[in-house]
Image (cartoon, rainbow, N blue to C red; front, side):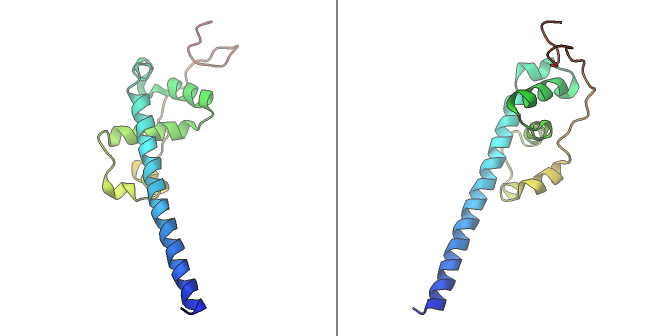
Length: 125
């Protein structure tokens, strides 16, 4: 086999590996986001907080060092697809899924925070 042919064959092989693993990674990310949304949505704490559970999601994001909007997206994603992720979304990049669902941010009223520890519903107040 000529060197140029070998190079073309190798390029095709590497491209296929990247494409296949990229697909699996996108699916894994969506599965994880749906499961995170399920955990938050089904938590008794979610039901306890006000409509949209703004205080809970903000506290959780702060405690975990995660994005509040990403956690809202997870809940929204789970609520939209509680049983499974549609095949057409499984192969879509995450930014396209976010566009489909709209913004991850839920409109919620700002809840009062403790003056000392800056968390909502502090047991010390």
